[in-house]
Length: 199
Image 1 (cartoon, rainbow, N blue to C red):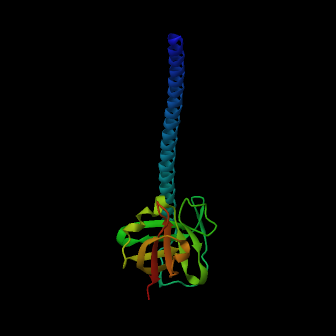
Image 2 (image 1 turned 90 degrees about the vertical axis):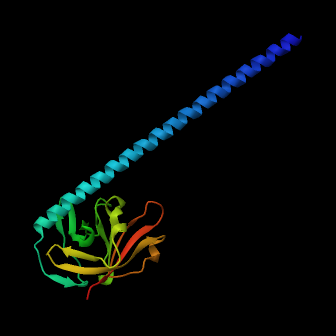
Image 3 (image 1 turned 90 degrees about the horizontal axis):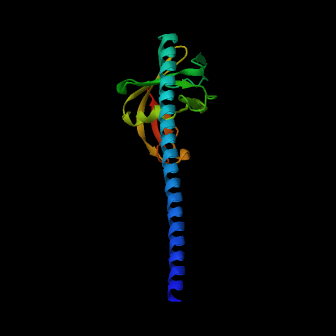
């Protein structure tokens, strides 16, 4: 009788161990699949960022070739921008930070959905230019006091001075200045460079 009871217990233990082994194997497979999916997303994001940088570089190069060197104007003129087609994008011109050797094309408000920076708002001559993180990640290199130049499609340049830069956790907390460059931060907020028109 005792051996029969021991045999039943051994069978129960063996079945329990088999179930635990199968459960463990399933969990390991799920973990491996999750890691593989994360790696694929990481590769895709890197490729998309590289594509965005390359497109931006090509459009900027086209704009610099086509836009005439022109007069300089201080501050905003309060007029809406004309557009120029470049590389499949409707651009209003380009923005540059000579001190940091940074430059980006700027698309009109009807932008392409974040492939290159775009004019998100131009209310009352106050400009808000938003860009994808892949392109605007170097905004953190722009220092207070730096000069920012926005050149429109006619070659008219408007000069601004950086008065602040840093993280903002809510878009509604951005103080409206003459020119704002911003991008989504890698965590949760926005990285914002605020500029005042040079007089």
